[in-house]
Structure formats: structure tokens, C-alpha cells
Length: 107
Image 1 (cartoon, helix red, strand yellow):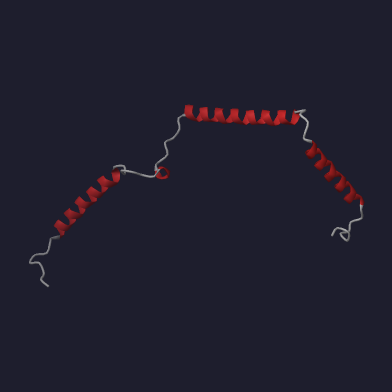
Image 2 (spheres, rainbow, N blue to C red):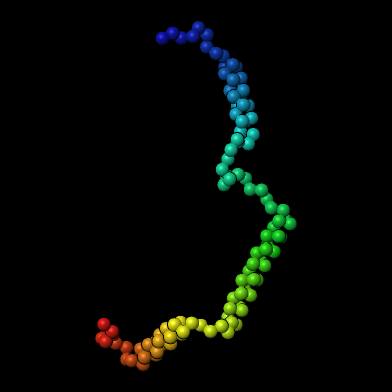
């Protein structure tokens, strides 16, 4: 194994290190060629965009509230099966509430 005749001076090493750091800084400064969308910096929304989004959201919630209100006001009859099931459940609950609490007969 041979050693080089002359070792590089500290100035040469320092100059090469500075050059490499400048190249690295230049590479890091420019945006990458491709970056997944979740890693991209967020673009802040303008006031107009934010207000428009809030308007749409408010409108959507108001419409949902109206639908909920009018669904409760609806006089449309429920299906017979639905009513029978509810009535039977009410009768069972009423009967169970009158019985002294014991699970001996509930097998």
C-alpha cells in the first residue's frame, strides 16, 4: 500500500468542503422534482375562499336542519309492520314493568 507523496493541505480540504456545502444548499433550495401531495406545504386560503367555504357549509347545515324539521312534521303514515312492532314492544315493556322483578320465568 502506497501513500501519496503529498497530503492535501487543510486549505484545499476546507475549500472542497465549502464547495460541496454550496452545491448541497443549491440542491436543497430548489423544489424537488416530485413530492407526494401530503408533504407539500399548504397554500393558505384567501379570505374570499375561506368565506365561500363557510357559506357553503352553513347552507348545507341549514338545509339538513330544515329536512330534519320537516321530517318530524311529516304526516305520512308509517308502515303497518312498523306500527305493529312498536305496539308489541310497548305492550311487552308495560307487562314487564308490572311484574315483580324476577327472571325465573324468562327462559
